[in-house]
Amino acid sequence: MCWSATADLMAGTGVAAVGAAAVAVTAHRRRPRDLPLAALPLLLGAHQIVEAVVWHSGGGAGPATTAWAVIALPVPALWVPLGVLLAAPPEARRRLFAPAAVGAATAAVLTLRLATGTVTADVRRHTVSYAIDLPYAPLLIAAYLVATVGALLLAPDRALRTLGGLVAAGALVCAVLWNTAFVSTWCAVAALASVTLLVRTVRRPPVLDPRRPDPLAAP
View (cartoon, rainbow, N blue to C red):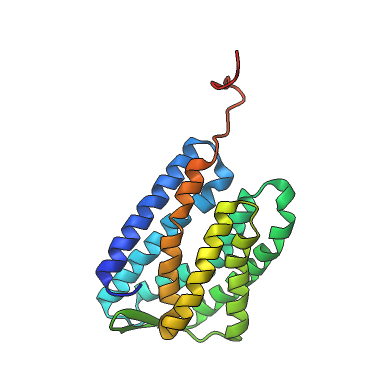
């Protein structure tokens, strides 16, 4: 994220707390298929905390840098489209299979590359720049965006489409303003935007236990 390790730590802690609340609400309302999306702020908040460690270590190619790259690259490529697919009603899932398949393939390639290559971080005043040698980088980036942003924009849920729009706009702004630190700054924007998932979680109606009477049902 921009500015400092303190900013990453504070933002990460706040976003992770939102994610924990979203997971708790989702579990309480007995909606297990919504859990991956509800947990997304928790994952992205932890990601910002990991970057705070990268700041403190001065960059380089240590374990924190590798952990940051794993959470930033292959994990969202698989997590986001799968979470959107699981949360969607059955009639809307057909159009979501494509980004999920693209995400699985992209995550596999990125995982293999991270396992065989080295990731380095370079702290540059108010940003952190990450470097990894990716084959066919433009194609991989395009596939990553199709899997993550594309899945959100194709979701039948308005809240998820709004999140997709925010993340897409954030990608454009970060690419223009922080070209050399695009991945770092965009991940921070995505983490902050993901707090909107708590609103979605709170607004989702609970799944009633069929063994219990509906307290809102007419007598």
